[in-house]
Image: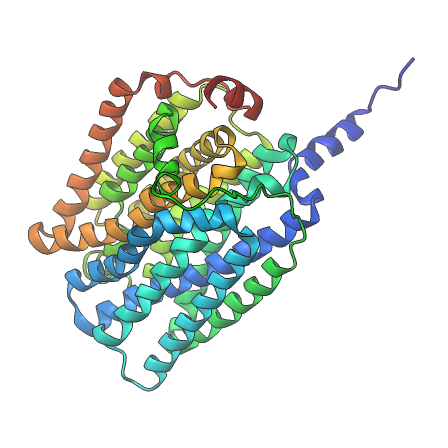
Length: 425
């Protein structure tokens, strides 16, 4: 008779399965490189927003911080997607981290020499947009080739968790270091980007399917065409796009912290951190117990809750209420990110993942920047609170429209890779 595992053995196996992606050494290297890269990026972006607000006291300039990063992202996303399918993604990621090192060094220099201004900061942020345009599709598309298929859901959860860990730690460390000076924050980010580059170059896996097709207009547009032909992918990407574009109030946090909630630098760091505290709490849970059923319903509900939370945050005048609402919005965001990544990465063939992820990145990742610009413009027009509340209402309306127009997305059930591939690829 076969031996039956004891309760302690079964418990140990369950704990092991919750971090099974780390049994692959290259995924471990990738994970730490991602933590450090996003850590540095979050610190840099949060510091730039704070520095710009202190320099100009103009909400429109906070919007320009986002626009300076979005414009090159949008201009280059078709090219960056092709690059991620034609060249080793680990090298693209490393080179982009080197580009971020250059930006951090430039911001450190202009701050230290007391020449920081709108005209010296915004050109450097354009370089950030270029680096992120090429890094984002490669960073996401590389995950499936680092782990076996059966570890994929766990790798997706831990990859997102890496991002959220950095989004918690980045603003928290920034808030503490701001007391020492803005130049100190930029100096620390330089070290993060350099270390991230080195770890990425240590990745050995070389199973990526390299596209050898000649570069044509059809090749450049292949990612867009593939997404348009898959209702569940365009639905998942579109939901996140509008949630961030309409419901994102991150760019206005310096105003909420200093003018409405009156909590200063430390409170600003706390608000920046709150949303990601909720997200990492949820995503850590998903590493142990990933969502496997009712994917479409969970996705639509999560985005609607994100919009509702945005409305409450906009009208709140209490710091702890605002913190709590942002925490709940983070939980909703984590659910949305997990389901979207499972859909996009599972349904897309590896030789097209770069192009598809480039489109996804420009509509989701870059929507953070255009969302910041939109928030800055609407705040300048209508006032800070109305801009945030209207954005939250818009997010809920988008969910209702998507639920009615995209029945295939609404009815997605199993999120297992094999089931998604057989039904939707």
